Image (tube, rainbow, N blue to C red; front, side, top):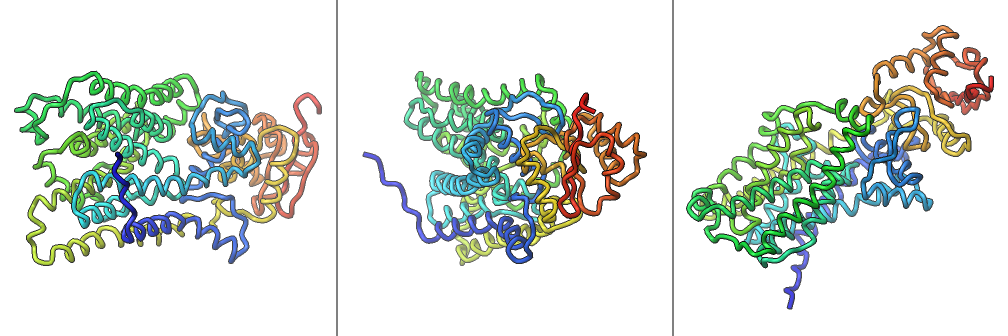
Length: 522
């Protein structure tokens, strides 16, 4: 008979409520602008518009083709990107749901799954109620000097539901793996969650493979070497199920990674996007931000890891370092993502390490522990919430909010039956695919490749009036765009300049849509 699941107590309910409240902070800031100031919002839920609009663009494309393509260029690129949750959102959009809403539905799923996976992890790793509570809060809210978004779990709830679900899938896979490992049986939960993590956020899939392989290797070391490594001395069984579990989990987790590697070689858009997004992030800054938790976690490495989960939790930070190092090379990109969810293992190890140092013998240790946890979580949360308005408030060259005239112009582009891409300024081009379902000539430089800088300068010169009329017409025709979208205060009207190649002009206050005559019809 199965043991009853532990009920959520009032403390955990309060923690979940706090996590949920923080998760809708950015959404609340946006709605405040809409309700109080009457602004036109472009339906994003995050600090960085280009990332949110990338998701909406994929959903728009998936609603028509199932697989998504690079729509931040004029000419059609192959629709070959499969992401399971984008496909589901695309299906919802095809049935009539607004793209922004079909993305937003994943937010509560991400927040709830993330919280309860961390709760389950704390309950599996630790025994005392106060230890579990401390680990839960630290895993969810920890932040220190110079809080870095990727390291602070609520950041992923601000417009990155796929990343947060991937973190939950990684931790959940380890929990299910530990249960199957202890029962010496094969289970399908770990490989399925591993495949999901790799599909949604490959850095977490890569980490899972390294964690499973590393833990299994350590658990299979000869007894003397395992004792020196600080792990349980009981050698695991070599039964077929015990061998099949790591093989199936690693293989299933690797399949999406192999697919993405092939995509990066076979699809020019993905190869250029990877190169454009390649950057490094100082490891010293990451270690400094995690320093208090790292110091406490280091104490846990003096003790043996109990069972698979105890060993895996110790391997996780090391696996993140390896993924970080690989991501900083030409083989991958965005190395900071390797540390997404890192507070989960560090919180468990940190609480265990402090307990192992005799913390319970310190007078007033519970009160001091509560103060330490509060100091490690509350200031970071307040700091991040105070910083958010800087990114989401209306600002020049930020299309998070647009004028009502531009909103009407976008409405025309989203409903006009004529097919064709849009030429506009780069900062506005970011929202074109997600808002209208059309391709755009230039947007962010991750996807509008090659020569994104040249595209950006060319578009700016056109709308500012810096181009001579013949050069302007030649430029517009060379882009292959069917529509030219001009915004408020950008420069002189393009009506006379483009007159010889115009089919129609649609004016919406100070915003204009110039419809270009298709080549061969003039």
